[in-house]
Length: 303
Image (cartoon, rainbow, N blue to C red; front, side, top):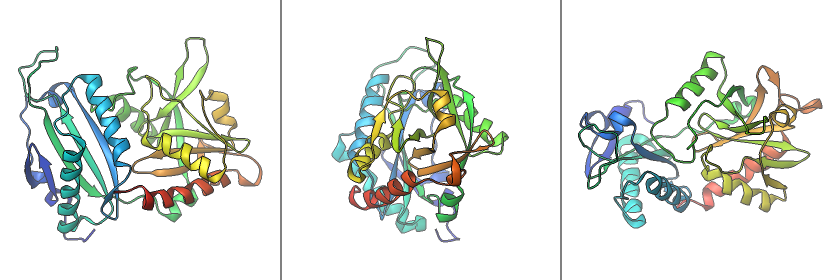
């Protein structure tokens, strides 16, 4: 990104209008502001192309349906708008690698808890320069802490009501770590991994990648299906099943996946190096193979 372009000057899209980010305003009675009554998506942009667009749209449609907000556009409509935003941001000096943020709230209404119908949803989109972790960050790996998952039990909806996730991330920052891995007590007295504050969590045991299956408590990350297919391509065994707390601590490798981080190795957990033997505290071989396949997918799965 060129030095003379500040984020606030980049173009954004709000309710059908194009304007600079620092000029965008929403009414105080917008239910997104009052109740966090809205949903969002974050789509990575590589070489000005949208990564796994259909998968993001499917999740957007699921989130909107779950909270009964009508979808303001069909997929072609969204694609046209997003592409225009990406081009405008690139032209303004925001670069060809971006993270596109899309938010839809229920709209403006007098403050009352029930869901009013007939509102016009508020649509906001911005796209900002994307700087995925570089080689040095990847070699160092991410440090994580664990924390009890104290959030609500509809983590499957990608809602803007993110206070629980904000508090979870702050716990990591307070501990000098990069991310918090949330642990949830099961009805049968066990403890399992749910997800990170803004990432999905994976472990490697005996050469196999294990991911947390989608449930009410976790967001079905776009990288969930992606990593399953990358495992298939690269000949790595992959299972989605609950991950017990003891398995997390005993894992050979731990990985985080998200739009911004892409795929990151975790090298320290609660102050201890991750893994065993000579590879302790270092990114592992399964991560290395998947990272390579992920880089290839970025080229092949962007439209």
